[in-house]
Length: 237
Image (cartoon, rainbow, N blue to C red; front, side, top):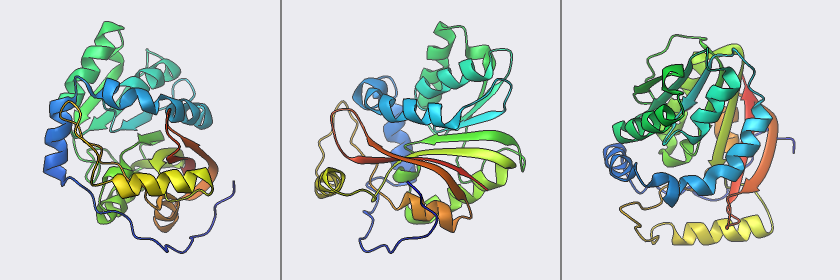
C-alpha cells in the first residue's frame, strides 16, 4: 500500500484517557502482569514489524517504550550480544521487569536502558541506525505525538530507518467496523488487574508525513483475537 500524501481527517481522534503522570503510575503498577494482559496480544504485529525493518548485526538500535522487553530481546539477538542495544521507557516499573526478563536469558549486559521521556531524549543528534516504537504514539495526545516525532527525527541518522506500530484510523471493511466499535467502547473498557486500555486509533500516517518522514513500506494488520486496525510503517527522513 502506497501512502505518500496527507488524507483529510474527517473524524476526530479520541482524547487520551490518562495524562502523562497517571499513565506512568498505571504502567508502573501493572508492569509485572502487562505482558499477559496486553503484551501477548501485540506479538503478531511486532513479528511483522521486526521482519519488515530487517535489523542487521552491529546496527545501533533504539527501542522506545520497550515495556516488558519482548521486542527488545529479539532486537538484541538481531544486533548481536557483543553489541549494545538501547532502550527508553518512562516507566521505572517496566524497566525493572524488562531487565529481569533479559537477565534470565543472559542478555542484560547487552542493553543500555534509561527511564526518560520520548519528548526529550538523552541522545545526541543523528545517533541511531534504527528506531523502533510499538504502541506508544497512540497513547500520546496529538500535541505530544508531534513533539515525540520531532525528537525521533532528531536522533535518527540521515539514512536511518524508523519502525512504527500503532493503532490507526485507516482501513476499510471489517477494519473500519472493528475500529469504530473500539472507539465507541474507548471510555467504557473495563479495568483488568489495575490496567485499563489507553491506546486509541490515530492518523499515524498523517502524523509521520507532517513531521517530515517518508513512508517507505506499509502494512495494515490486527492484533490476535480482534480486527482493530494496526498500522506497521517503515519510514525514513
